Amino acid sequence: MKTITLIFLLTFLISAQNITPDERGFLVKVGDPVPDFEMIYIDGSSDKISDYLGSPVLLQFTASWCSVCRQETPHIEKEIWKRFKAKGFTVIGIDRDEPLEVVKQFVEDMQSTYPMALDPGAEIFGLFADKKSGVTRNILIDSDGKIVFLTRLFEEEEFNSLIKQIEQLVKSP
Image (cartoon, rainbow, N blue to C red; front, side, top):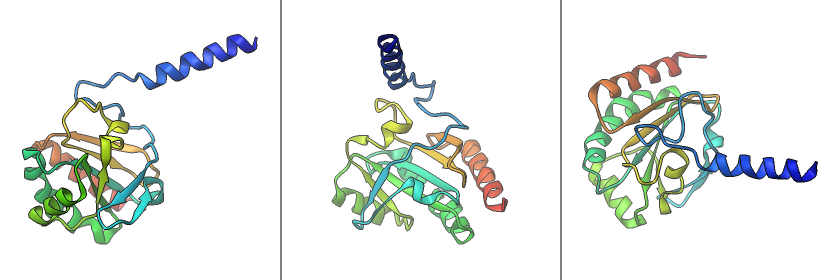
């Protein structure tokens, strides 16, 4: 009986690690709990995503070489971060696999003021999306740690829907 249980457990663990990405490359879906991970910010500080439980968070996966990210970042800064941060909303940029100095220059070039974390080896990105897929994506997490909205690329209609979701989250008690 122990052998059968062990075989079942190993089969389950192997299949759980081989999650098939959806058509946009996501490994997670709306309704999933956010996986916990540690972030190291460009200022050297660190925390875990679980430290943010109790308030909604937007994770923005980005990179300096990504033209779509460069297009999106000023909109996130102005239309999301500056608009909602006083209401307890957090935006965290996560730069995919670039050196610290490159990321610092990117933040300066984009004039973004929200926290920016490093993602060496795209390990954090890989918790949410297939590492072979494109970087531009946002993960909206509610105060309970559930994923409530996913975006891919920067499309006006989807971005406006993201803002509507954020409005609902910051209105909730």
